[in-house]
Amino acid sequence: MNQKTHFHYRRLGAFVCFLAFGLLIILCGFGQVGFAATDQLSPAQSEVPVLKLSLRDAMDAAVDQNPTVRLFQERIHQAQDVANTQLGALLPNLSGRLSGARRRFFTGSFGGSPTVTDPRDFYEARAALTQNVFSLSLIQRWRAAKSGVDVASLNAEVSKRDTMATVGLVYLETLRAKAAVEARKADVTLNQELLHLATERKAAGMATRLDVTRAKVQLENVRQRLLVAENEHDRAKLNLIRAIGLSFDVALTLTDEMAMVAVPEQTMAEALAVANENRTELKVQKQRERLASLTHSSVASERLPSIQASGDVGLIGNQIPDMLTTDNVQVLMTVPIYDGGQREGRISESKSLVRQEAITTQDTRYQVTLEVRDALLTLHSSKKQVSVAEEGLKLSLTELELARERFAVGVATNIEVTNAQTSVAQARDNVIESLFNFNAARINLARSQGRLQDL
Image 1: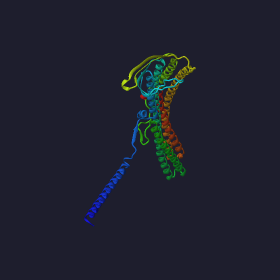
Image 2: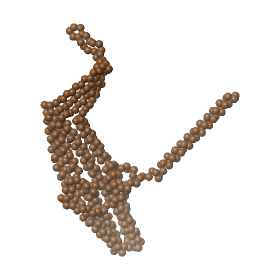
Image 3: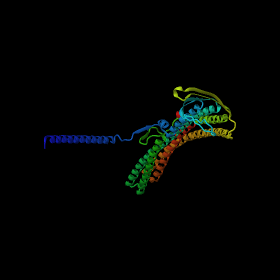
Image 4: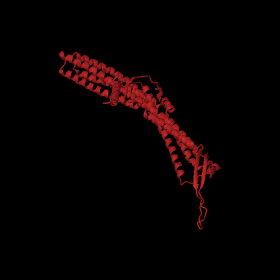
């Protein structure tokens, strides 16, 4: 092996060592990345975030997150684009044209020997301006389109308030499910105490095996009801998340509780007056009537003459440096005479739409009146229901205590205790249901009067 060959081998060996060292660094880098990825998936970082919501927070969040509200917001933009399109018909329209051509002209007669000129170049650059001077139909169309924007805005407000009310009711349903879970837990605790009492009484010879078995059966029954209540609570929270429009990857915690609150007294006339002043549905229906009236006016105005001015100026010539200026200005009056009855058909159709909107307005007023009366009656009734339910719960707890004492001294079997337990569970459900009805009536009354923001 000569010195030159030995030198090449040494270079090759150094290259191999360098390559192996580089691979080792890369592998170590992958290992660190792998460890880093493992660190990113640690349980502490993969926990579901906790979201605490009050009733007001939930209603406000729905305004920004709910898909229905966002859809109506997009319809406002659409209506504004329509109005801009109609306005464009009233503004000047400017267009430009640039052309170049090479032509041959026929100069002879067909009877003799036809002749054709040599090719000639033509260049033209022209700008044209068109302006509608007067068209009542276009003006009314633009006004109708502007009214359409108002209708879309009010519809979005109606959607927002409906969504807020819906979310508020779903929030209450979730609170009701939560209260049911707490009631079932209280039932389980109570039944465990009664089972312990029955077991002690049997050991003392003052109760039978049947009493103990009956207590066990009752305990398993309330445990089953607890499982059902917990499932209903979880489902209610999912429905609330969906109603608001949040991600399902959150742990929802409700900070409010169902309770009796002071509600200002209102007569039916006062409640209806507030609703007639604030209900957005009545405002949007007035705008719909106006929109239908303007649409009818725009169609009827097509019978009138319209005036349009136009002009153009440009350069024309055989050579670009030698082009000459030409212009044209004109005023055009268009007088509609007969279109086969199409215009009259559209006028009749628009009249029908005006009448339909008037009927809808009357029906909307009836619906608002119905909603206010129903909500106010339900509110008054639910107040009384809460008082009756709370009194019933007190009496059922007293009955249960007396039954326990009678069973403890051996005067009665635990059948009385079981019946008293059932009464307590029913009384707790009555309190939960009456509180839910009361608070739901508050939301429904606020919605029917158009004052959810004051709830």
